Length: 612
Ligand code: ADP
Ligand code: MG
Image (cartoon, rainbow, N blue to C red; front, side):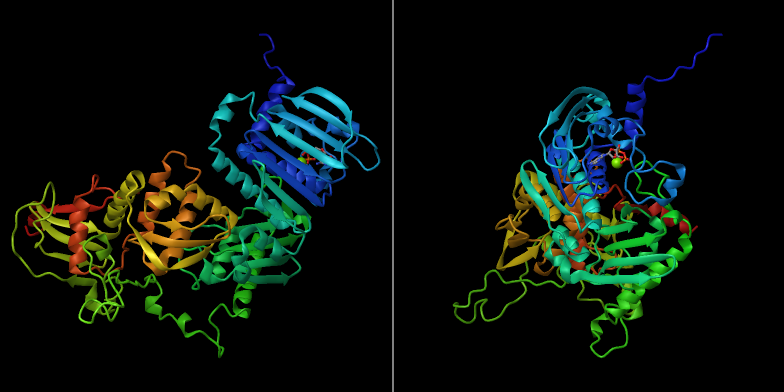
């Protein structure tokens, strides 16, 4: 038989390898920025168009390259950074594989201009799909500028796989953050479609964090610092009260490189134990320095996963260091005289969620009205509608043994049947079981409704309707509320602005970090606006990579999740009844927006069987 094994032609091998290094525009951004840092740049500009699909350009003032190096830099395994296998164990640079430029050039149109200090003129190279198409001498500033256009031009499948411009831009922004956070001694600029979205001057770590994530970060940060023989830890954690619903700002860097480490993440979370609710995530920016020979970065092509020699020790050190910081900065409950008694949560309350206090304003209140009207004092407004589900929440948290079963309505009167699998007309008894289920009777037996999921379904359909038909009712705020957002959050608010307006949010302007809210949907309690918006943004950002559902649906889901009554909330009889009635008025009453079963019916036959 003839020999059948052939070596792949270079361009094919390059394309295959490229797929590993370049997954999306953000990967190019990461590689180019890291090269600029390795070249000793003090100022780096990132220029992006259309989420990197049209253009990604990185301009640095680093060492530049000679003509030969410029050409060589695009060869696979061409690197100036290591020369022997031994060097791999003592890496001081970000790059070392010599693969990035070769990979990028294999699947895009690349234009490079570069000059070293020693040369008067520079080199201008154009490469398309690994082929040098032109090389010229050029007058250019010292340093390197590389622009990458038409990414994946020769791999249509990859090009089609790219997500929306906004999604790709967010991935790029994430990479930009990761690189910029760890190099506060380098100036960064980031331009998107011609406008500058980040301008980061040289400063300290703290300033860099604040420049990126907004000024509200400043008083949230607690410094962390520890030096042992194994590791030097520095950086910041966010105060426990600012723990977020989403993973948000969690950054580990090891030897100036962004890394992911579920194990070390766990150490941080363990240090926060008891200080934050179990479904929230602490923010952190932690910089670890270890002996380069004790860390192996070589296990993954995109180089965010690392292996430490002694993970257990690192874990223990990290956890105790953070605990110490939390204690030292008085954010953990410790014995001291300025101690905030509000932090003393009785043990039995620990698992119970905090209830947002409700403030209701009497819209018909008129101070000039004659006595006897509704004037004189604020009173609770009793409106028929969904808002009522909130009335009474949290007011009856009498924590006695018997409150787990609240039997509210005694009426046994039989009425006509509700539509479909509905409830016996509204005087049917309902009661709440374990603050989790609402139980009622239906023709065929016993109806058990999961209060949280059912309310999610009801709210989901309500909001989805409002977003699409734009009929949300807004409640004007007496005093506009000022909320501060960082740039990323602001971008999300802008993105979903129209939908937010449709459901009743009114913003006065979205140009600055501080946004004034002048109106909110009827459902949202005034005191909870900030939280609701924060969570909404977080949910939206988390859901962004899932391009399969519409923005309206994503928002309606997020809103329903954040506003629905929860397990543990006490519902009065009126609210219970409303929950039942409104659930069965839904288009899809049987599933929550998250595809969980909302209710079940235990048939009389099944109950009978139990008595046999
Ligand atoms: P690596 O970074 O792993 O060495 P790359 O393919 O990213 O591999 O780059 C290849 C080589 O090109 C680098 O080793 C470096 O010598 C040179 N190079 C790349 N980008 C720059 C830059 N912005 N400034 C100076 N030299 C650069
Ligand atoms: Mg590199």
